[in-house]
Amino acid sequence: MGDSMEAAERLALTLTTGGMQRMTARVMCALLFAEQETVTAGELSEWLTISPGTVSTAIKSLTSVGLIERVPAPGSRREHFRFRPGAWAILMSSQNEVVKVMQEAANEGIDAVGEDSIAGQRLAEMRDFYTYLMNELPAVIDRWHAQRETR
Image 1: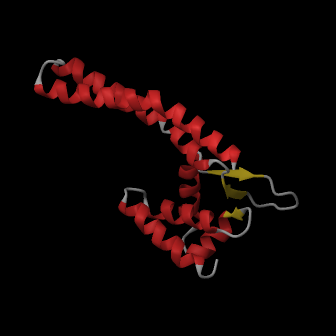
Image 2: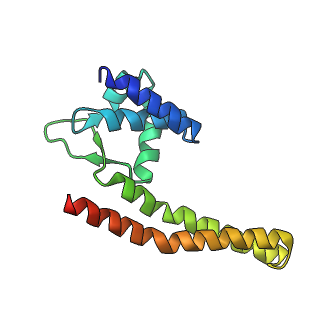
Image 3: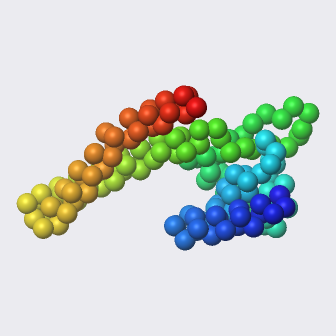
């Protein structure tokens, strides 16, 4: 990975500061900065000098949110992974589940304390924000795809 490894590590540190697990951020950035189309878990482990188990855990996490995917590699016995085309829009789409959970949590809180209470008013604002976000995200993602197609 050469000189790009330093930039990848800086980005991983930024993501970690933002709340992402450190090793997941490092694996994600290694895949993002990789010059080849696909990478094996062994290569990631070697590049990052981390255990195969740590790489496996990070891969599961990144796969579950739609950022990376397994890809066939004819003639290879090892699983290959790549940063998924359209990953950022996929990530926001999968985040809709988080938005739903946040809406539900706000509604449960409102049910517990009543919407007219001070806490209920805060929770109503939370619910309303996530409802708004849920309504707006699909259109934002559609506009993103349309913009990408015109390039």
